[in-house]
Image 1 (tube, helix red, strand yellow):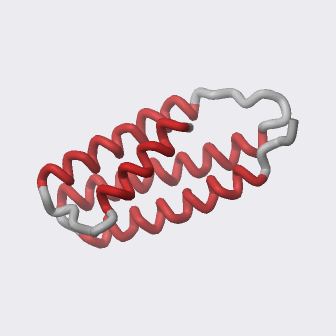
Image 2: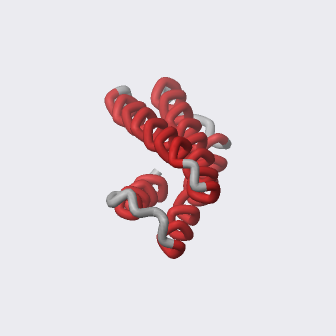
Length: 109
C-alpha cells in the first residue's frame, strides 16, 4: 500500500499543473501508472486475515478503479483525448474516496 500511496503522490505532483504535454512528463506519468498496475495485480492475489474482509473488499474496489483510471489516463495522454484524462481524474477521485472509507472500516485490534 505504501508503494501505491507514494506513486499517487508522485502522480499528483506530475499532473498538478495539467501540463502533461511535455514528453518527459508524459513518460513519468506512464511509469507511475505502471506501478499502479503492478500494485493492483499484487493486491488482487492477497487473502485478507480474519476480520479484515470488509476493508479488503473496499480496498480491492478502490484499486480496481485506480486501474481503470490508469488505462484512461495512459490512453488519453497517448492519443491526446482530453476527455479520457478528465475521466481518469474523476475515477482517481472516486477511488481516493473509497480508500478513505476503507481506512474508517479498518478493524480495531
